[in-house]
Length: 205
Image 1 (tube, rainbow, N blue to C red):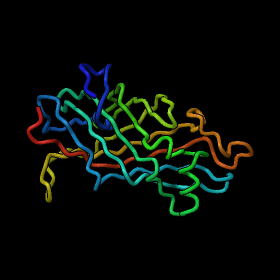
Image 2: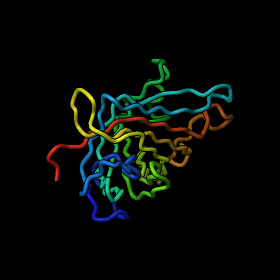
Image 3: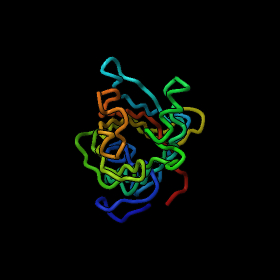
């Protein structure tokens, strides 16, 4: 999952935020950051018959990324979602979303986002480009990312931590998910929103 330069990224890690981090406490070398699953939220939003958006989330995710905070370069990154952990606050709907009409969780248990590039757009903002693998198909997705804070955590683990927000919009039909598009029963456009903390691994590198 590791790459040698910012144009060639691969393996592990959630690249989302690395594209930005511009903290005064910057480090001199690339560091490994692991997503804190206790402080990770991701929700999606999709329109239902034009009346109102249905919102849901994935409750099981893991990821990490390698980031040079001083140079503001993302070396690699990957996020992995367990597709059967989808939750929309309705049991029958969740079962439907897990089946072959949508996520086909039995055949495709994981949804992955692997970083391929990033661009800094401001003091604490950037765009992370990555390959989203869904239903066995891979397509590029661009995330708008904001680094909210980077500092030593004030309690608990007391490790150096990055706080990140990110968002993107995609069309599910590009991955072959076309159920409900006829008659506009279920929208094609899916809005994604992320908020999470990532902890720097002590003694790494």
